[in-house]
Length: 286
Image (cartoon, rainbow, N blue to C red; front, side, top):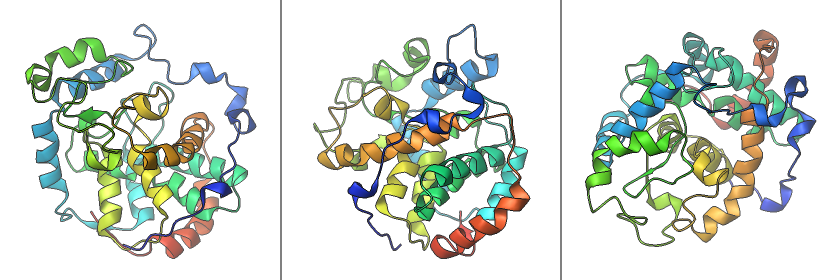
């Protein structure tokens, strides 16, 4: 894998009001109040928090990281994701491919000089192809967290569902640090299994020229307890603190560009195919 590093100074943080669709109140996004979300959302998180253990994650990595599940281009994967609706998302109920183009176009409007950032928005969720190949949604979608230590209190629906997780009864894993030394860095923790970690690992195993900032955003974009709530600071490193402005900037587009107004994908495809050809060409081993 070939990766470039883009200087942090080139990142200009933006206000989400610049691109929020339909002038929607930001407080209306990610409303996980139990009486407001569909049953399928709460059920997905309950299964996730109950079953995502250190043993489970290691098992999933052994299964998926052989990269023998198929070879497909970025556009082929995006087209395939028309068959999937994310059951953990309380904000909108549209196929995931449309969200990909909404996110990319939001980034393009505000960061027209960063095609690699736009591509990051386009591909950030394509690891969800796992679900179409048999992985349950609770091991594919939703907010991620660190396994092998006590869950952060900010995790949505966490208090009840984590009480059923076997690791929380294991002294190796149920303390604040768990199996980790202090400030070990997020590169050295075991994340709950999902599309973020899968795509990150896929990119490492395939030829690409995305910068380290893009790989970091892809790996941790669903890690809301960290980048939005400030959790797990006892495990983060100086590198994580340097990277967090990027992931916070990405999160605005991932979240606030969600809209029932769908983009004209056919019109956009030639523009994004050219960026794909530059940074992530050809077929990807999954």
